[in-house]
Amino acid sequence: MIKKIVFCCSIILATSCGTSRPAVSNSNRTRTSSNTVTKTVKKNTPLNQENKSQASKSNNSTSEIQNANSNNSTEVLAATTRVKVTTAMVLEYIEKYKEIAKHDMLEFGIPASITLGQGILESGAGTGPLSIQANNHFGIKCHKEWTGPSINYDDDAAQECFRKYNEPKESYRDHSLFLTSRDRYSSLFKLDKEDYKSWAKGLKDAGYATDVAYPTKLIGLIERYQLQKYDAEALGKEYLATSLNSIDTTTVATMTSSELHLVIKGDTLYSISKKYNISVDELKRKNNISDTGISIGQKLIVK
Image (cartoon, rainbow, N blue to C red; front, side, top):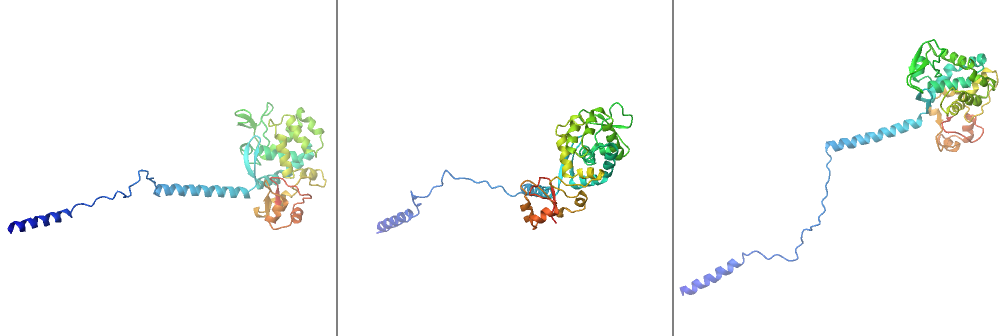
């Protein structure tokens, strides 16, 4: 009996131990793919945030510069100096020296438009180094006959000798004497005093400047700022505007940027009239324009 009891206990014990075995793994278990793609995400560290901030500031600054340039009329004047000036600066220069140019036209026979145009170009409208340091507005070099004060300046060659004056009006007078006292410029005085185009070309042909574009630059300035007006005034004639923009320079000098429009590429009278909510006829009337042609760099009264 005891044996039977021991035998039964053994069977029960064996059965109980079998249920504690681990379960068999399912052959259909999902495996981790060996082609897993790992993404690296860069944190917004203080350095990265600073770089983004700097980039944003840079973009904003560029936009501000572009906007400022679109609202300011500027040009580069390059002869003995290369400077960037505004229209207001050129107009101020004209107002300051126009009477001297008209007086010298009557005394020496040089068109006031040529004198003013050369003064603007050669001196950078009075802002170039030679005009500031030496009151030399026409880039006149010493030459062998000059006995007055001088200044050295890099031009066609290094440290060339240029004349120095006590005040700008001395430079204007010396410019007239310079042209009238040299045989190579004698052919200029056979030209019509109101023919500024021939004078500009004649100056280059006579060797006043080495720049092949000198006549083009000079004529461009004369027409842009209506300098031929002062030729007519000096001769006591009525001035008839011939270029596209016949705004009186004195009027423009007193106007604000919001009252003027600088013509850029793609502008038409129609597009400008729409921008400022005025009619094309009114725009033409304000600016003494008889046709529909306008040119880049031209300033138009719009208010």
